[in-house]
Image 1 (cartoon, rainbow, N blue to C red):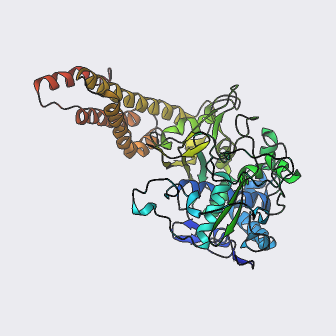
Image 2 (cartoon, rainbow, N blue to C red; image 1 turned 120 degrees about the vertical axis):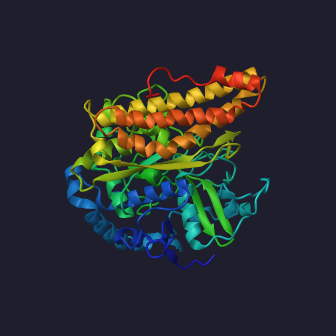
Image 3 (cartoon, one colour; image 1 turned 135 degrees about the horizontal axis):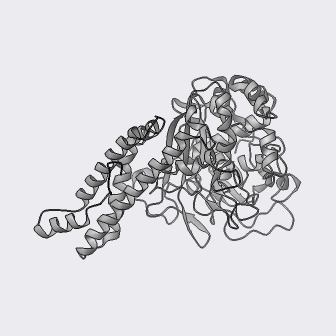
Length: 494
């Protein structure tokens, strides 16, 4: 590999955006970088990196300082910071970005082996798109970043190489802390531009200190001081800091022209080890064993909005909570923004014998929800959130009724009910997503009529899904259809 410095992430376009690719300088200068593109895992990794740069450049002391800083002020500070640390962002060279030349002895593997949608090794090739293609430098940079926190657990790491004395490697590398066992769901606030997005999600020193989750506070980003091994002082400090969650170095990589060398890196504690989590995930940490919100392709993230916004109507010590939202949403009332979008995404995984993989219905999932800031006023008088909870509860009841009705029909038909009921319920939720924005708007209006009008449409949709799933061509089928037809109770509000 060419040992000279080439491809600087600050100058070269590599971040997927709506208009193609952007460099780090483009993001903070506002040169057309309006929205992140790419897969959900790529978005998570990019959001985390941009937040880490912003936290390193200008972590405000409190929310008042955050408001005074503003999106433009933060962007200026970030551009100055990137100029100061320009030499730390070379993808190749003697000190390559987030890489470890010391793993040169590790086994060389193909880049495709780290891409979940590429067939390598014993994986069956089903589609032409699964064939491994050469990666350019921009794609390699993105692959490197994603696998720092979203790497799959498994045997694609060289267990024979350890950089810290006394460290013993297991046969399978642990999954990245942004995934854990099944694939965690991550949530961020989105602004009108990427740099406004970074500002909206910027955490303050006061918030980080009050939570007492990150013992070392904000910490130092790894490109300023790289660890020399898996368990040296720098690595241990990263385990206990916010920076260690944003850029965790879960793998020690070295990019080569013809492949990548991979060694298990810092073993960050997870939610089962001291309750350590990324601020962008949602968890109930009040339980003896924390309960996490996992990505689920069968339940798109917009359906999780009551859990994601539960902090609007609960004590901080109760129930599911996303730190990123519970810290950042309350201050929006004082910010010069009228509306925001909540982006949630992740990937569903399964594992066997330490190996993580996609199988069956496993897939990536993401969704965006637009909300006016006036909706996000918390407390016991949060009329919108209370009305929204009721509306979502009735939607969930409708989905369950569709499942039960179809299952009852086919059970009496002596046919397998589970698969047909699951498909009918999934169809209902696909249809319901179309009028979900109307439900969000309706709950912001006085009275119940606007919300009930949306729910009447949902009830009609539920009946339609049931009827399409259950034939009525014969007298017997018609009798079964009538017997198991969903009953919604009195009233037109489902």
